[in-house]
Amino acid sequence: MFKRSHSTLGVCWRIPSSARLPLGGERAVFRLARTAKQAISVTIVDTAGRSPVAKQAARSQIGFSDRLLVSAVFLVVSLVTLTMAQTTIQLDQGWVMKTGDNPAWADPAFDDSELISITFKPKNANGIYFAPDPLAVTIDIENHASVAHELRARFEWRNDRVDEARVLHTIEETLQIASQSKVSQTIEFASPGPGFYHVVCTLNERVKKSMMLGCEPEKIKSPLTREADFDVFWRKRKQDLAGIAPQFKVTRDDRSTDQVAVYLVEMQSYGHVTIRGWYTLPRTPGPHPAILSVPGYTSTMWPYLNRTGVATLALNPRGHGNSKDDLDPRGEEYMFLGFDPEHPEKYIYTGAYLDCVRAVDFLASRPEIDGSRIGVEGGSQGGGLSFATAALDSRIAFCAPDIPWLGDWVGYLEASQWGHENYPKLFKTHPDLTFAGINRLLSYFDTMNMAEWITCPVLMSVGLQDDVCPPRTSFAPYNAVTSKKDYRVYPFAGHGVPQAHTRLKNQWMAAVLGIDKI
Image (tube, rainbow, N blue to C red):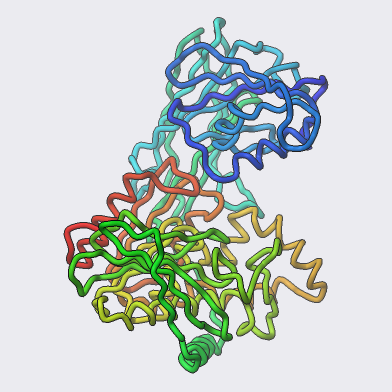
């Protein structure tokens, strides 16, 4: 729990001036404000070196009477992860050193105007290394204060596990840093073998930053967790789906433009569940190639109005968007719906995976679509659904998963906090459940276990600093794919990829489909 000794919480963040607000930043602010229960004073220093700007909110807008910084904090907190137990604030490009009212963890050698920032510069631009080369990284430590400091620096090489974190190697040095200056330290660690590892820099036990680096990720071997009836299970489920008449219904929508026609599509899927999606069709003569676009976790898909060279079906699987008639989570954890290790056929992802196959049925049924040119794409959960669709349906011509989830469930529990935070909820509602039971059920839906069925080309993207879908869990299914494949790693990206990758992926998809542009 965060502790402080005075009534006002003072925090200082150093952020890039190009900061963007990802989903979830607001919730982080709300939690911080509710914990502080007092006015929040925030000092922001941008990377251009301009003067700090202190702001304080006048009134709460979210239902409690304490003062809350609404504007600036949203932009800042959205970029950081607050680790209260370690009193650290992680950023992609810089570090924050805090002061305020001198809480117990603050170093008294620094005052409110003084900042120390840390920046990592991996020798290999994408943060991925290959044996026998050492993992080398230059760490810039910048003193923004008006006085010099002596810093006790510790550089650590750690594994990527949250359940059994382990320090593999440590280097300690004392650094002298003048006022308004920077020192650079290049450190090297011998290649520890295939995997992902944290480099951690700690200064005076008060300022800390870590960066994930990768070593030969294509050689990571994640043991398959298939049950003996894995193949039979999915063969029967596809037979169940084939026995349900799809009853495709297509309705013209007023979102249509001069370049694309928009339709609402409705169909019957596994378990006689109604699912819907948005179908956009170029107004140019066909037959057209098509892309099945699938959503992130509990998100909603909408029509792709800017794709004029390809048809797109933006699918909302059961429990998502406009596909909640028969199955609405209503605030329940989506992935816990139907959780019964003895009956995996009733699990939510049995239906969700087969919803994607039913969407391919729709595209393949359309006379205006070239059935030999249907691809699938998606991010996060959508990345996992992309892997699953390509594995379960040989009609898929390409698979383009971004920051994919739903792979290597055992490794996910080792490398992510999500399971440790949410499995207790599952045990509360299912008191007889065991970890063995959890792993058994999830093994049927682990994309790693079905990836060898993929026959089409694959392009995967990974955010190296992703703690939502840790990189090792993305490479588990990727490494099991035996068809033509490629990947891109973005060294400073978290759970998301830059626009440059979207452009690259669009070009790649267009090339596979044999068209000029998407």
